[in-house]
Amino acid sequence: MDNPQDKREVERISCYLEGELISDHGDYNQVILYDISAAGAEVRTHRPVRVNAQVRINVITKKLTPFVLEGKIRWCKKDDDVWQAGIAFHRPLPLPFNEIAQFMH
Image (cartoon, rainbow, N blue to C red; front, side, top):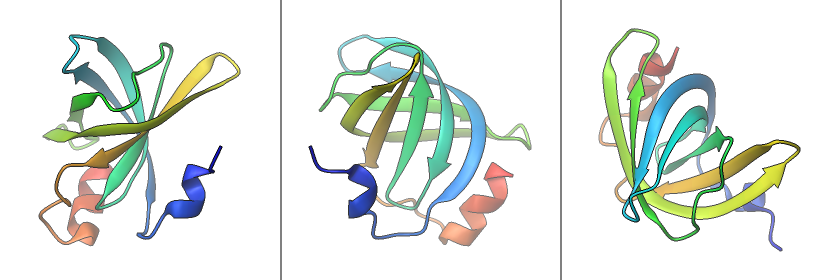
């Protein structure tokens, strides 16, 4: 299996934000947004997420600003008792990424 980290073309910012992931299949997961870039993000959860599912993540930033991310699950794998999933956003985030990163810290 290809390592998804090898395909990264844009800078990622580490973060640790709680959120709710809702898929087009009706699945609902509490997630931790682990890192983010202008093109995608990695989330961690205690349940698997379907690859190719269309998802919406409702995140509350550390500044208590609501933030909604939409995309497609590209990969999902289990690491010990935690599931990791990579999300490719439908559209790159609209603001310059350094401004978006300020919401994450």
